[in-house]
Amino acid sequence: MSAHHTPTDRDLDRTGRRLRGSGRPFLLVGVLLGAAGILMIVLGDHWVRGVGFALAALAVPPATIGIALLASGFVSWWAARQKPFA
Image (tube, rainbow, N blue to C red; front, side, top):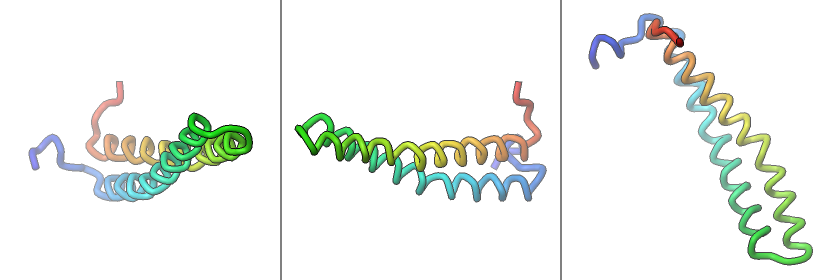
C-alpha cells in the first residue's frame, strides 16, 4: 500500500467498509428485481406486464438504499484518508 492510500482514521475507514459491504446486497436485490420486471414488461402481454411493473416498482427502494450505502461508504473511505472533496 502506498503512503497516500493509507487511512489516517482507521475507525472511519472501517465504517466505510461496513457501509459498502451492506450496500452491495441491497443493490443486487434491486438490480435483479428490476431486470426481471423490465424483462416481463418487454416480453409479456396483459397481466404479465402488470406484474413486471410491480416488480420494477419493488426494485426501486432496495436499489436506492444500496446506492446510498455505497456512496456513504465511499465518502467515509475518502474522508478517512483526509483528502479534500473539492
